[in-house]
Length: 249
Length: 358
Image: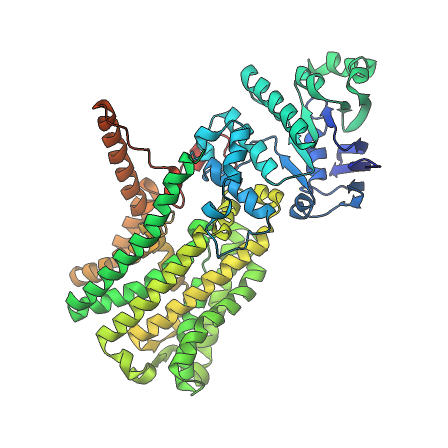
C-alpha cells in the first residue's frame, strides 16, 4: 500500500474558546503499531473521538484508506473497517460476553436486520473462537457487567476484532489495570497484530507499554503534536522529556 | 469448545417447542372448561397480551418508553369500526389490513419521534397519539365522535359467539406472540438489546441505531394495531378512549408488573392486570389506588417484575440443588447460563461501576 492508512491533516476541535485539538497532522502507516501519548488533557481522547466520528472536527480533514471520512457518521466509519475500543469501558453491560461478540458479528455481516435466523446459531463458533483468543472462554455466559475490569477490556478487544477491522483504535487499553492485567493486554495486542496484520492506533499513559510494543510514537501536549517519529527516536527527544518530567510524572 | 453454547442452545430448542405447545394446550383447555364470563375476560387478556408484548419490544428490548402506543391500538380498532360504518370493506379485509395500517402510522410517527431521546421521545409519541384522539373526537360525522361505534354486526356472526370469538383471538394472539418472540431471538433482537444497552457502542460497531429503532417501532406498531382489532372482536365497539393516553399507559403497566425483561412477562402482566381489575372492581371502587400501590411496590422492590421473581427463585433453587448434588459426589448440574433468559441482571446495571449511563 502506498500512502498511509489513516491520514489527518490540520485537524482542530474547539469547545467554545477552548481548543482541545489544535492543528494535528498524523499519518498511520498500514501494518504498524502507532501510539499517541501525552499527559492528561493533551487531547488524545478528543482526537480519537474525532477519528471515529463521535465528534466532528472544527477544521481539517481525515482520510481513511484514501477516502475522506471527515464528518461522517460513526457507524459509516466503522463499516469502512475502523474498529475501536473506548477509554471508558464500553460494552453492552447486561448482555453476556458471548452476546456482546455476537452483536458485533451480526452487524459486520450486515445481518443486524435479519429476523429469519436465530442469533445463537447464525453466529456459530466464530463468537466462541474470538472469546477463546482473548482468553475469555470461561466467561462466555457471564453478563459483561459482572466480568472483572481486565476481562472487560479483553472482551472489548474481542468485540472490536469481531468487526474484522483493518485498523484497531484502542483508547488507553490498559487504563485502570493491574500490572498483571496490563501485561496480558500488551501480550494480546502484540499477538493480534502478528496474527491479523492489523494496524493498531492506541493512546496510552504507561510508558513501558508504549515503548514495548509501538513502531511509531506521536506525542501530544495541550492539543498539539510536539513530537512524532520511530519509538526509539521519540524516547530520546528533549521536548518529550520536558513534558513528562515537567508536568505529569 | 462447545460446552458453553450447547446448554443454552438446547434450552432454546426446548423453550421454542415446549412453551408454545403448553401454552396452546392450556388455552384450548381453558376455552372448554371456563365459564363464559371468564372466557370473555381471558379473550380480552389475550388481546391485551399482544398489545403489551408488542409494546415491550420497545420498552424492554429497545429501552424506548413510548407513550403513544394507543395511537396504534386505537387505529387498529377504528380501521375495523370505520370499515363497517362506511362500508369500505368486509371485516376480514379490514382485520388483515390493521397491522399494515399500524406499521405505516408507526413509520411516520417513529421517523420523527426517534430523532429525539428519552423524555422528548416520550412526549412526542404522546403528542402524536393525542392528535389522533382529538381528531376522532372532533370529526363526529366521520367517526361518531365521543359516542364511538357500537354494533354486534361489526364482526362476522361466526365470531359473535363467545367461545368461537375466544378461539379466534387465542389463535391470532398465539401466532402474534410467536412472531414477536422470534423477533427477539433473531439477530435483529440481539442488536436491538445492544442499542438499549449502549447506543454509542452500537453505532461504533456499524449499527444505524435510528434505522434499527425505527424498524422496531414499525413492528411494535403493527402488532399493537392488530391487538386493537382483537379488541373489536371482543368488545364489538370502538370509541375515542382507545386512543387516549390512559390506553398507552396500560401496556406499560402490564409490562412492568409482569416483567419487561422476560418475553412472556408482559403477557403475564396482562393476565394479572385484567383479572385483578375484575376482582378489585367487584369488591371496591379503588382500582386506581391499588394499581398505583402495586406499581410502586414493583418499581421499588422488583424492577424486573414478576418474571424476575420467578426466574431468580428458580435459579437459586437450582443452584442449591446443584451444590447438594455436588456434595453427594454426583456430577453437579450445569449452572443455568445467563443467556437462557432473553435479558438478565435487569435493574442491576445502575449499581455496577463501569456500566455506562445510557
